Image (cartoon, rainbow, N blue to C red; front, side, top):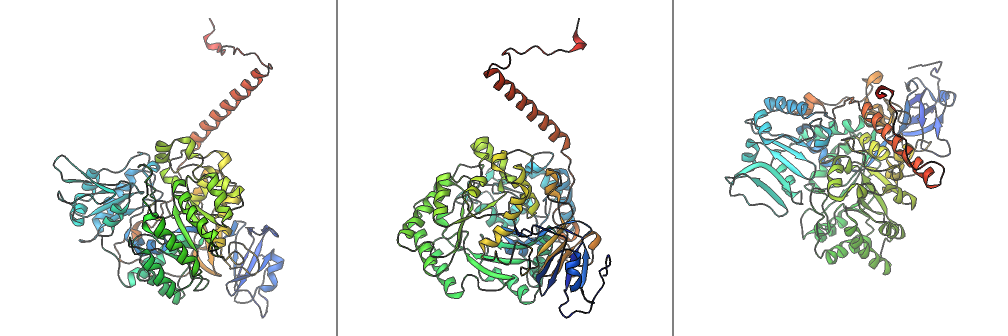
Length: 624
């Protein structure tokens, strides 16, 4: 596509792809900005301006005119349950981004009408009641009215699930069903389940109930995963670190991404972790896996990154902020065995830890092993989440060579956190600035898909603004980051967690050609609109894996969504909206200005520079 005088030349080393006329944020300190780049064999060969890439344009070079748009390195979600999400994507009705419960219920009603007998309508993560104008959950009665005969399961964060009558029957819940450990089946006056399930505090009751729904088989799993990866590409994601998780068995549930990798059909680079699934069997699982594989086995598209995010079930805390912090039992003996086993065999790990109380106990085990010279033994390790980690614990993490991965769980659970722990605690949940000030690697992710949405721009908005999806201001400016830092947390920092920082997360010669052409300029768009950014063109390894707008049709063709009744086939995934909060923001800005004015007056009074008494306000309309 000759553009602007760039004509093909007969060259032996012609680029396969050229992006020009762009505003490129490279992430490379030696050349932060550029206008064009060239790609060959999936790797960036030239970064500069039009004249620099011109000699590399051959007859078969695909030239993309960015039309002056912002181009960034491909995003890397450092904590995403991408494997599990892909296996279920086409079965799920997504309320991600839906602005009203009324719209959500209308979608549910329509989907129930097309869902065949024996299948469920499931709404699983990516939304919060606080995002709705109504600020509430759907009721059981509303679900029964929308779908009288089709089972409906609605998961709300790590807190609860709402089931209609048909879903209760399909799941086998009745008057005699006992409450599982750590969960509650809410019952009516007659003792029958009402349709509400509560995590109290364990979410196992929610996930074990969801596991009773039908699953995809055969080719449908491949198609579902490919469409999920395309949905992630839609937002500029080119890499993700899969944090494993409950009900994700190795190697069975990993076989789909392995098959896609063999066929060259992954559009997202995946570094994955392994997570023991059965309580009391963690050491046996880890021992077996150590004999099967080693971290960094694989290639640039699919590679093992280590163990976690759980090593032993007893050491895991819960993140249901509507419930008190769980008191963990004596988990250290088994946990120490697991960490010792990993260190002796060259395996790094990531560790789920929400509360500082858990983190302190974990660190004591690490320090004991460090005194023996066994930790970290050259292995990468990190804490995930760490909402209430203390300054002392961060110092210990730094001393042990650890890293952190933070997620925007409080985008969706911020209001619940404030109600339990107060706004003061929420201001430091997590203490991102304190982490960065210690020189720690701090990567960012979403923890999608069962709580937060997989849309990384919602997480970037949270990092920069400190606000929840319900627009509650959680973190003050002192615990927020600027846009460039937030972007680095979603690019280069994630690459550091997988040991790929020399080839990923930066746009410079020799690095992977992973990039996104954005719908809006991330660095100049109004802060509320950060969450509404999408990619118009996403490139992974030099392949155009997503294209929209002016570039529609340039990406790789996917097979149709299957089964045909899938919610994704009719509604798609994330529901973009242009909700306007300008009036609210203006009022808040005025309020902040008034408060600052009053603080300034008090400062002047304290120094004798202004009278202590304040004249009564003068309003000529009321002068007699």
